[in-house]
Every structure is written in C-alpha cells, then in structure tokens.
Image 1: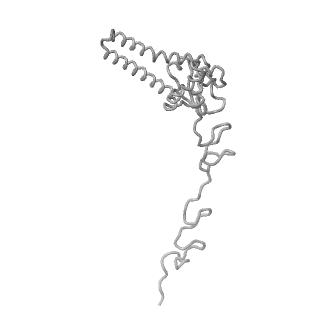
Image 2 (image 1 turned 45 degrees about the vertical axis):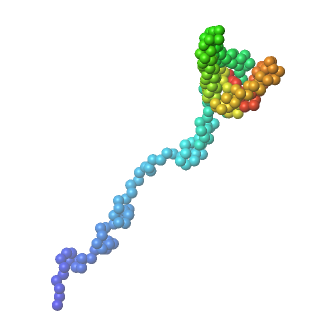
Image 3 (image 1 turned 120 degrees about the vertical axis):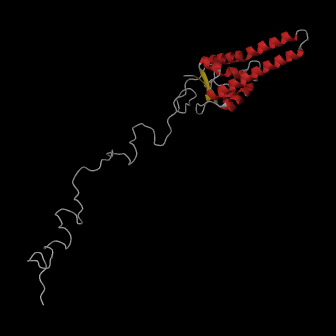
Length: 231
C-alpha cells in the first residue's frame, strides 16, 4: 500500500530543511552570534575619566605641595587661632604694652569699687548708718570680683581682656598658640603672687619681661604662656 507524498516541495518530499540550516531555526546570518542576538556594532567605548599618570584609582590627583589626604585644614593665624607651625607665632609683646593693658584693666575694676567705697564712707557719716555702709561696701567688692572673673574668662577664651584688646596683644599657650582656657587663665592670675614676692615691693616677676627672651613673667613660665602682638 503506497501513501501520497506530503504537500510541499516535490523535490524534498519529507520536508527536510535545506542543507546547512538547522532544523526548525532560522538561518544563521554571517557575522551574527548564534541564537539570533544582534551583532555588536563598533562604536566609542563608555566614557570614563582618563587616568592621569601617577594617580591612584578613585582618588583625585594630589597637587604638588598640597595637603596630605585625610589631613585637617591647616590652622590659619587669626582671632583665637593657633600658631602651631614653627615661626608662625607673631612677635612677643613688650613690657610697656603689657603694663598698659594691666593698668587699663585695673582701672576698669578699681574705679567702680572706689566709687562704691566712697559712697559707703559718706553713708556711714559719724558712725550712723553703719549697716548701709557695710551693704554698699559688700556691693563694691562683688562688682570688683565679678568684673575680675569676667576678665579672666575673656582672657582664657579669647586671649584678650579689655586692656589687651586696646593695646593689641593676646595671651596664648606657648606650645600651640591657642587660648589658655578659663582654668589655666585663673591659675595664672593666682600665680602672679610668685611675680610679686621676689624683692618685694620691687615685684621682680612683673619686671622680668623687660629683658626676658620670650617676654614672660614667672607665672607665664610656670603655665607655659606667652603674650604676643595681636594681628
């Protein structure tokens, strides 16, 4: 019993694919990857920053004489700023500048106290109103102590009292050029007794900056502080 040939090409009765073509897949084009993916067209490579000679991957190029990676910005001299680099510290303040600043600070504290003390004397009279005189005297001392502590605080925080600001000088730590802080500024004031004791009443320690190389009093040498010209 014979079967009729299948419809199609009479020369290919069993529907075989043409020679060189896989069965059931479209014909592979020359130059095209197997599987029908489009051929990669030639073109410019993805744009990446060009690597500079001597530059590490992923880091900006270090400029000559620049700052090391990871370092903090260099401290610039200025108001309350440090002078950590050798030679960056301005010149030391002279004895007359220091004397003028101390005199002005003393007047700011002493004048209100003197006024209140005078009022207390006037109130007391011939022994009457003693209680009022005592109150005014205590008030005078409180004003003087309050002004003194405020000046020490300003000196420790900024390096300047009103007198030092007027004559353009500043008190700083010798090792890094930073303000002393309130605690060390207060200790320095207490240590002025060391300046007053030698050859009293000559007070040799207060005169020492006149010829000392760093213009320091004895108290300055103990707490490692210097008084410089303010920029």
